[in-house]
Amino acid sequence: MSKKVIVFGATGLMGKQIVKENLKAGNEVSVYIRQTDYPENVNIITGELNDEAKIAANIKGFDVIVSAVGNRNYEDPTMVVAPIGKTLAKFVSEEQRLILVAGSGLTLHDSKTLRRDLAGQPEFLKHQRADHWEAYTSIAPLDLNYLFICPTMVVEGDADGNYFSQENYFPKSEAKQISAGNIGHFITKEISEAKFNKTRIGLVNS
Image (cartoon, rainbow, N blue to C red; front, side, top):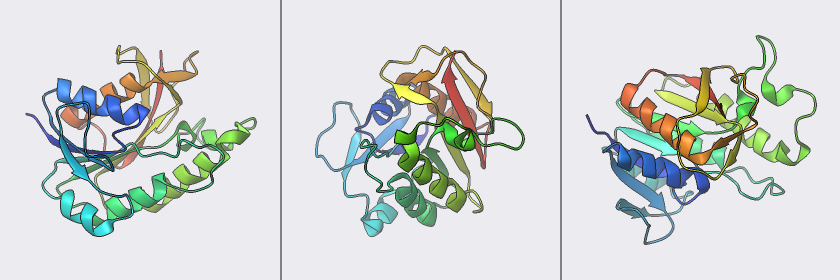
């Protein structure tokens, strides 16, 4: 059965692929963006990420709300994942599902250690790690149907299905990247299968 899906951050590397994969699956897709046009055949809702009233009004009626919002400037400490995540969590209903893309730092390396706390984590990603952690620690305690998608370094590329996923932990793989298409593929598959709730999923190419 097709789902009604709205994607935030739809103009970014991951967002475009999430839209693409959902359309391929036959889902009805809307995008919430600043622009008035979009390359795919979707319903466009134009708005700003800080417009809570507009967001609250426009997420009504969707089965799944996906946020692929991120800060592309690694030197900028401004949080973006956490603020939009908190806004969506505030207005999502009991019947709706909230899926947020963050980073692999939220996954466990072992039973006691988060990947974000391992020695040697890239210094240039410190602001992103803080943003993702704020989002996760704010939303995880809530009684919502949420799912955090936690990919490693994201690169361009369409979906080929060659990736590993694991709940709570980061999957073991010799690869250090994942294509944006494979993120879109996993999210679309999960929207259909609904295997996970109130948890996080690590993703990496196989």
